[in-house]
Amino acid sequence: MVLTKQQALESAPLTLREVDEPQAGRGEVRVRVSVCAVCRTDIHIITGDLALHKTPLIPGHQIVGRIDQIGAEVTGLRLGQRIGIAWLRHVDGTCKFCRRGRENLCIASRYTGYDANGGYGEYAVVPHGFAYELPETFSDEAVAPLLCGGLIGYRALQRTALPEKGRLLLVGFGSSAHIVIQLAASRGHEVFVITRSENHLDQARALGAAWAGSDFSSLPGKVDGAVLFAPSGRLVAPTLEALDRGGRCSIAGIHLSDIPGLEYERHLFQERELLSVTANTREDARALLAEAGNLRPQINSYALQDANRALSDMEQSRIQGTPVLCCS
Image (cartoon, rainbow, N blue to C red; front, side, top):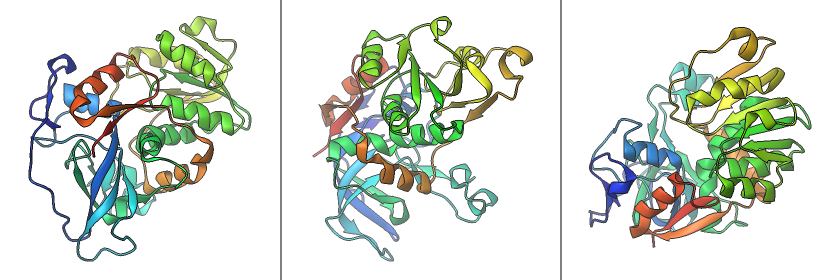
C-alpha cells in the first residue's frame, strides 16, 4: 500500500501496487511480513502533519515477520526466525547522544515507514541491529502493537517517574494507552482516564481504570503523573493542573498542536514538570518485551488492501485497541 501524495484519509490516500521486492544489503535482513500494526504516527505522515521524507512511501513500522534473506556481515540471526521491526531503524552510534545512552535523540536517526519503506506490504528490510526477538507467548497479531504503541507508551510511562502505587492519568485513550493502562496496573498503580469517546471510556473501565470520564473537572483527585496521548496542545494546561506537587506530564505523541499560554503558579509551580518523548531506544524495546508477559493487546484485523479503512477507523475512534494489517 503506497503513499504518493499526502492527503486526508477520506480520500483513500494509499493505493495497492506491485513493486519490486526489496533486497537485503550489507548488514541487513529481509522479512516476509506477516502483519503490520497501524500507528497514529502513520496517520500524521499520511495526512501531512509530518513532512514527507521520501516518496513514494510504503508506511508501517510495527512489523512482524520471518527472515527470508540475510545480507553480508549479519550475525546472530537465522533464516526463518520471527522478528519484530519498530520505528527506530538507524543511529550513528558515535554522536554525543548515542554515547550518553540516548540513541533516540541521535542526530542521524532514521525511521521505518518514514525514511525507508515499511510494513504495509509483503516484504520489509531492516538493519540487523534493529531486529527484535519476540516472545513466543504472543501471536504475530498480538505482539505487533507493542512495537510502537507499546514502546512509546512504555517510554512515556517511564518518564513520569511514578512513585510506588502512584496515581496515573492517561489523557486520550487509543492504541498506545490501552497497553499502558495494563502495564501501569500490573505495577500496582491506580489509573484515571480522560477521553471523549464513549467507546474508549468503556474499554478503559474494562481494562481496570479506577475512574474514567470526559471532563477534567470530575477527576476524583490529584495525580502523581500523567501521559498525554491526544495530539492537542490545549490539553496540556489542564493536564498539568491535574498534577499533584512534583508530578510529571509526559507527552507521548510525535505530533502536538500548539500549546496555549501557561500560568506559572497554576500549571508549573511546586515542581510540576512537562516532558516530551522522542522515539524509543533499543533498550526500551528489550525492557518492554521482557515485561510484556501479562499484557493483552486488543487488535482488530484488516486485510492489507483495507489499510485506508483501518487508518480511518483508528482516526475516528471507531474501534477498541489497534488495527493490524494482515500482509501475507
